[in-house]
Length: 333
Image (cartoon, rainbow, N blue to C red; front, side, top):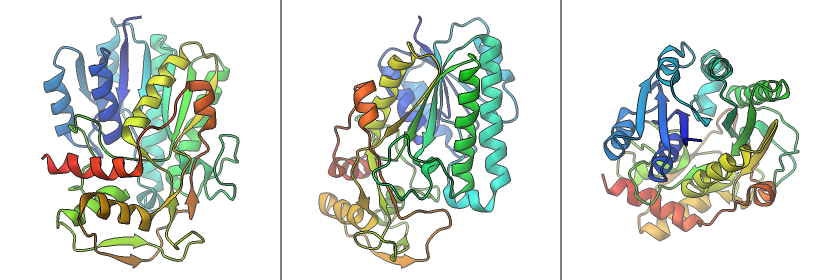
């Protein structure tokens, strides 16, 4: 094996952080991104740091894989890490065709390319949204799969596609069902972008800390939770990325399909993460309540015991670490 990976969505927060870490560990990475919902600055930072081990291809995989195919024809690829995809729950409810076309077709095209090039190992960036509004918390991988949003539906559909391809012997797949990644890696070069009208909570908190927004809007205060705001499982990006390297080792000997939750197993409300951010960074975050967003659920947190038992993975970073690192990374700009 020559430790060469294809990483789709390498310009995004998670894909970029993984790519940076993989390169720093000695992997070679062929990165692909269309910049539909990401920024070229991330790719530029990675290319500047690792000019000899990183190849970047700008391509929309939902339209074509021609450029990627040209680059890998003479290269032995050890596996594909598929981060690319549109991911805003609320937007997906208004633009379902956009999400289905982008997320499902890009995955189908990628699998077709893998079959042609005889690449077998696949790590999929899935999501806790595949569990929908689960009445069972914490959530096990064996929980019912159901959707409350078009975005969640695309993740479920891609997982089913991967299961079918794995059953046919085309690929061996690990699907990593993320909960809510926040924070920034140790070097703090890649981080969530608070300047591009983010949907995720932490960059919206940071927009208030930067005085870009006067107030943070909390979507819903009447959920059946500890304080009426949504409960989520927030995981430090370092822990999430480490889960991918554990999955890369595990998939080497896997035949078929396996899914793993990547979360802490602890639920945190929106109000609690705001309070934590205020306390560790010494910055007040003005906020007000707004209507619930379509597709959001009251509670969603993981039972990560399967990943612990089979991958030998567990989280190391605290909520305080997540809040500190998220702010430190942006302050460095």
